[in-house]
Length: 436
Image 1 (cartoon, one colour):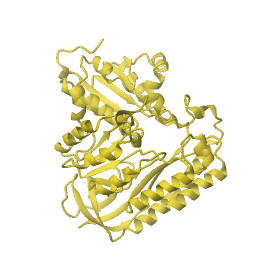
Image 2 (tube, helix red, strand yellow):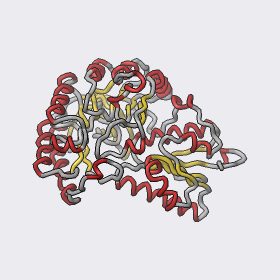
Image 3 (tube, one colour):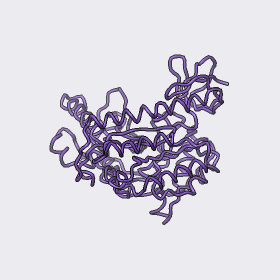
Image 4 (cartoon, one colour):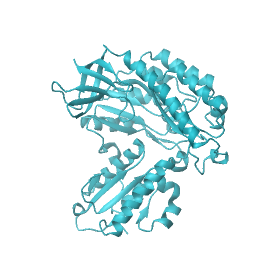
């Protein structure tokens, strides 16, 4: 049964989001649908709410643990009579629904990643497809994430995403342009294109890779000044995307391309469908096509069977390529993935040691790159004001994951605006600057 109430506004719904930006977009869509039917729906509000929806992450052990702890916290609140209803949705719920139902009887119902209409039924709300392009955003007023597709057809051996998000489904270009226009009309100046795998975009509906077409279409949307590309898969990378990044004025000279490793045998065991030589050729072509590009990547250490020699290959690869932004993850042994059949034989202490080595090398690379920027003037988006300083980002930085520019607020500027900043000093990962 759904929640019956005289007036929806009398009951507040609070949505708690765990995990990645893709989950945040799902929560934004849920809140948009609820508010359109006159529910008082909030996102991670500290005020009292009658109904809690926890949107979970089920990616790796730490994320799963955080999700379980969050559900248990609200289960106790429900037991104590502080909330009326508790619903759980998202990746953890998709992946472990049967186990969770047995272990957490306090939860009123569990929903998978693609079951928004069923969740809305609990609130006596009909899912309205036309609201997707009108999505309310929970990010700061000047930037938003835009999900261009759902699911993933890749078979990377370490990744549980296809178990939780199913097959790849692209959203039509006209729908995304409509959404971008809607965001621009509300003052959004920057959009981050996200997907499980963005370079696969279009194959299902247009029978070809259409990410470049999407970039050209979005570039024409007035009011959007920065379009940022995330989660590009390196194997069979569509080279016309590089031309689009170069030619489209509003597309940032930035690409987030998770490479995961450089040793051929590890890449093979990971089922990444690419060799080190092919990876190197791709990076070289990205840099020759877009000389000012900032490349963000992620690496995975401690994959089953990773030898010292293979890890040294990765170190050498990082030193040679000097990426602008790097994230390092430690391998997590996930049931249901094909790597689960391998022995998780790299000790946790070695995983930590390898992470630290890579990040120390990246710290020095980042500092050197930052030092070279001293004296330059950059266009900077101001994200927030705090303790007498503005914090902003250059074109080479995505919110929450990349570097910041710290600017003393010795004269007025408006958060959410673009400003010109002269770089005066450099830290390992951040820049210090002054308003020009």
